[in-house]
Length: 212
Ligand SMILES: C[S@@+](CC[C@H](N)C(=O)[O-])C[C@H]1O[C@@H](n2cnc3c(N)ncnc32)[C@H](O)[C@@H]1O
Image 1 (cartoon, helix red, strand yellow):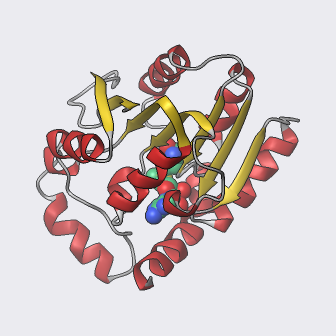
Image 2 (image 1 turned 90 degrees about the vertical axis):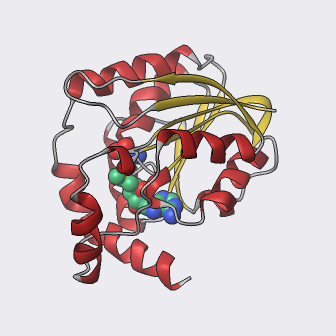
């Protein structure tokens, strides 16, 4: 509980800067959107958790029926709601929630999305169980997650120091194989692993899973 409160504070403080920052690899991001759209139907009901300031939900909204986009940070959600209003986007609802506590009935969603967030969730087992509960049978779960154990090893030294200074949130140093095992253990069949970075080594696998 204390950890969630600390992380919520961290992300609330980070929200304005996060909203103003550029997307580091725009070509890679566009590829991710394109590949995500491949799994979406025009009348689908979609969940996005850890949606941040709503950029992805708002980009995908014209291609689906309805999106519920959630985040632990009220500041992120407030910025996202402002963007939805400015864009006159009526089929996205932004809500404050963790994936384990989203108040929607079981089997509501055709597709669930989690981008750049699974490595930040310490209670990942509960989060994945929540996503599984919310998906319809055969529903699709797409994630793209920095697998930090496959990135610069210095991070392992730097992150704990930054956390002590309140300058980094909770993070897990996952590998792609570990992450896939966790998703599979939550009741999913892994059906795709792709990499979308337009340059450099890519340790953010785009994983596609189907609810068993
Ligand atoms: C790196 S940002 C990614 C935002 C967005 N998905 C994107 O790709 O730009 C991580 C987001 O996850 C949210 N977050 C962190 N821990 C979370 C948790 N335990 N449950 C839900 N969201 C969380 C943060 O508030 C933040 O908005």
